Image (cartoon, rainbow, N blue to C red; front, side, top):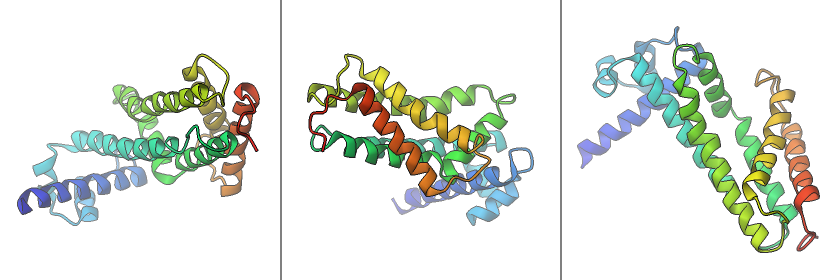
Length: 209
């Protein structure tokens, strides 16, 4: 058990180090020796877990996508049919917007886009884990608000799509596709307006204070 746990810990350390190095230097400039040093392991240890740099790159992005997805889904779980829908939607929107603008999420998008020519399928894979799961789970949460009479519409997937567009569109534009740092106040303002717009378009006024 200790041996297995140690192997898992080393694998996770390598993946975290690899993502950090790829994000810092790019795919082409990143070296396995640099990644091993960042992970605190020997270079052969990296190759014991991953056969080559391409395999490591794909695994590092997949692991980062899972972390981003987990944080996004945790934010969406804040949406409940109890209490003030404005408050619950705003809280979720702020958490999603902040995660969208953090270093890991920005690096994941940048690396995915930068390697589209070399690994075109990565965009589909990363999107399925991050945006795909988020849209589905968000639609499910919004459906609960519809059933509770807090939102009016028969298509929660459409509301989810609009909600996410109201978040990501302005964030991408204001950050100039992630090249400009947004202040916490700017991020929260986008989130607040997204939640308010969704409620203006689909809210029923029930439960709002």
